Length: 483
Ligand SMILES: *Cc1c(COP(=O)(O)O)cnc(C)c1O
Image 1 (tube, rainbow, N blue to C red):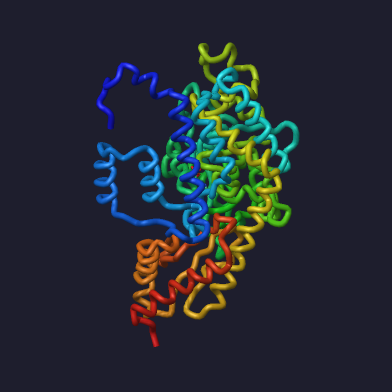
Image 2 (cartoon, rainbow, N blue to C red; image 1 turned 120 degrees about the horizontal axis):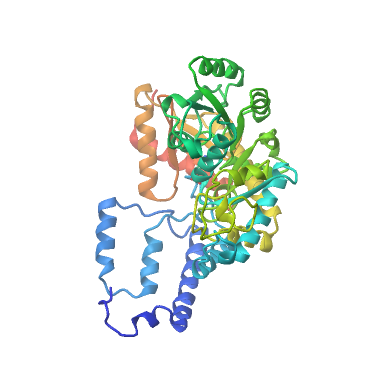
């Protein structure tokens, strides 16, 4: 760390082009080396250290004399490598390299994007990118949307629009006068629950609909749940479909939900943060049949669509709805809140200053073509199906269900019944500490499952065989196999 005010030129130095060039070239080389070495399995997915060790390391690093190149090397060494083919854990994209490079441009140009002058290119690209999403969904020319920072914020924004459209009173101006509620699958992402509470719906206002054996919303009980809510004095304003659910990657029956929403004058929102991206795939878009009937849809580019976090499309069937959500006066930003200007993106997003996130998607399409999204989905969904078959063919393993998406839950069960949960937890911990694979876990009822999300298009069948081998090896070492 430099002493403050060491040089009177300190402020000039932070903008020195020659230094930028020098460090920048070193950095690109470092990152390229990193990607090549993890892709060829020469390095582990992660070198796990405890939070205490990690904190101590970075406390000393701050005052060390390490040069910037070594500093970046250390950051890489202390971070999980999502470009590693054995990164099959949480649902985040393995970013296309051109998208990451665009990220550097985003951070350097730092256009605020909320108003047109502060992001001419990024606002125009944002329209192109979100219009493409609308088209893929099957919306007509009335549709319109924008990008925002993450599925969590996008879902909240969509539900604000739902409240605006369906509440009997003007909540935005007058606060709550009626008890509002929404219907959602019990398997929905936790951010829906949070959004509902932020909207002031409270526990009572989040009606969780049970799921069937395939973890899909049981649409045949919707009438019963809606009537019960009405009897309790609740005004149900919206129903949310999962495409797909987080734990198991299951797609709700969107067609049936659409009919129910229409019949009961509900806002139909789809949380397609992860699996909504199948609209890009001819082969898998049938999983989301009915999506075009939704009033609003969220799709994360930073899950299945090769883009660094955060980068989320929120699109509305009636573009007009997107402008009404936040209608309020902000005189210093624009003359009239009432006019509908796609190019002033702050009118429709929660965010004021916003990343130039559209560049990261646009660059992928420009360099690789929009078909790259389809190829990625087809590869990841296809490989998950193969992995599921692999698991069901190995003795000792139990597959939770044949996957619809690229999320596979399984566990090792050739064990005394009472130890299954504990041993599966240990298996994961050992995998993480060895660092050859990164997988996660989930709990379904009382049972703990190992959970794999295949996010990396460079993951091979042989990597997945190796994972199962490694699990078998660690079981053998434990000498606890039943019989
Ligand atoms: C990831 C995810 C979210 C949350 O989105 P973020 O972009 O992480 O904020 C919401 N719903 C589903 C189904 C998801 O998979």
